[in-house]
Structure formats: C-alpha cells, structure tokens
Length: 144
Image (cartoon, rainbow, N blue to C red):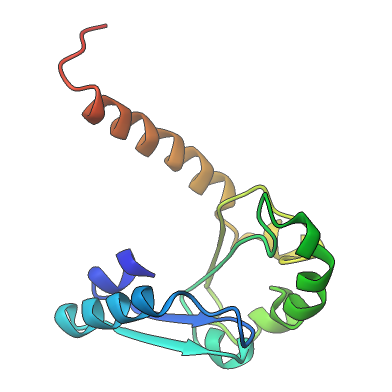
C-alpha cells in the first residue's frame, strides 16, 4: 500500500468495514499517491476493488496472536475470498500474489493460487534474495 503509492501505482484496498488500515497509514498512502501521480482507494466491495486489476494481493485473515478471532474473521472476510468468481472481474492476465503461507479455502481457493496467474512461489524466492540483500546492507563491511 505504501510502496505502491510511493511508486505511482494505482492502489485499491478492499476490506470489510471495521478492518480498515490505521488512519495514519491511509493518509500516508493518499499523500504518496498525490505526490507520485498514482492513486489510492479504500473500498468495502471486493468486486469493485478487483475491477480491471493488474495484480490481486491477499494475506491471511487472522495472523499469529489473533487465533481467538480466527472463526469470527473467517465469517466476516469470506466475501473477500479470492476465488475464480472474483478474479473474473480482473484483467485476464492479472497476477495473483500472497506472502504465504496461505490458508487454502479461506483467503484464496486452490484454483487461484495454483493457476498460471499465480506468482506466489516466485514471490517467495524473490523475498529470500531481498532479505539476504537487507542483511548484507545491515551488516555492511562483513567479509565472509
């Protein structure tokens, strides 16, 4: 959300009411978009959010430490599941991303995460290299 708007992308976030990002983060994204020529939109309708999307990115509905809320979140977030019906509204060559691990059948269905549009495994590999680069930068000057 922050990086995309900083880089001039048109970013649309879809979330159930009551689960919006922090207002400071929303303001930051809006300011980035205004400066970069991108755009930022917060919606509560997943179909409108993916309309003609190039990229669809989702994450787990309940993170570690939120186990007590998991069942309630599943019910609330189910209309936001990335499935074959939802992705019909995106561009035909959309890219599906997820930071993994995914809960198949919850935030994403097998037919989407295993589709040719999915780049989750490339994304995971690239994250490894980005993490190694960050470590090298942080530990700069270390000779191995």
